[in-house]
Amino acid sequence: MKVNQREVHGAAVLELNGKLTGGPEAETFRELFKTLVDQGKRNIIINLKKVDWINSTGLGILIAGHSTVRKAGGELVLCNVGDRIDSILYVTKLNLLFPAFEDEEAAADHFRKETE
Amino acid sequence: MAVRQEKMEFSIPSDFKFLGAVDAAVQDLARELSCGQRWINDFSTALVEACSNAIEHGNQYDKGKAVRVVICLNGHRLIARVQDEGNGFNYDDYLSDATPPDPLSERGRGILIMRAFTDELTFSRRSGGGVCVELVKDCEDGSPSSQA
Image (tube, rainbow over all chains, first blue to last red; front, side, top):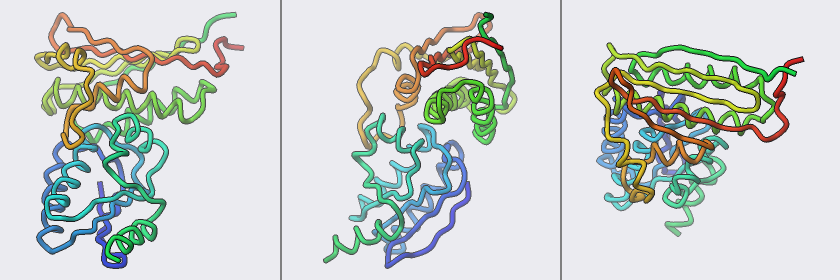
């Protein structure tokens, strides 16, 4: 899993590339979310455009990220969620936990409106 | 007319990086059916989850142990069996607990996912140790159940 990190209108964007499967890479993500929060980032966008699929341990990575960011008073949202991942979020009801947006701009707009 | 039957067997090491190969195998075999990409993806999601389970709970990431996968196309039906080489785990607890996990729990959704994307899901203990999971999904949209 490759991670491309950037910023869009003040929000931290993590663009993931590959298959989100958890396992040993979960710890790497845990550190990444902690680092972002330590750097003062509170608005996090996970771009899933280049993620083909996800398994239950991959979902665990997203939930861990959500919890870390939430505890720091921030919010983690998703964007570019494909049909396959959308189905998994729906059956696990995690669609209720993760706000999802069409693209990074729409996700950044969400954060902008929150601060207005 | 003969019912179409095909079978694919392979093993993967207990490493999540090989889950992509499982998905690719399902995508290739299921294209023989005319059930649509969503149906194929749903079955593959369930099978990848079963393999993830076998790697994590069955073989406990021991790369010296393999996960054996058998996929059978039988008429309009796709059947997959996933076997690990671990010491077995208590799947009864998972199966009997129909309650969705706490939304903030990072674990406990594997069987929920397998159930949601298959028509039948069966766990059994193997005589030589380990667990076998069988996943069945029927294609209802006019699949080619017979070979020309």
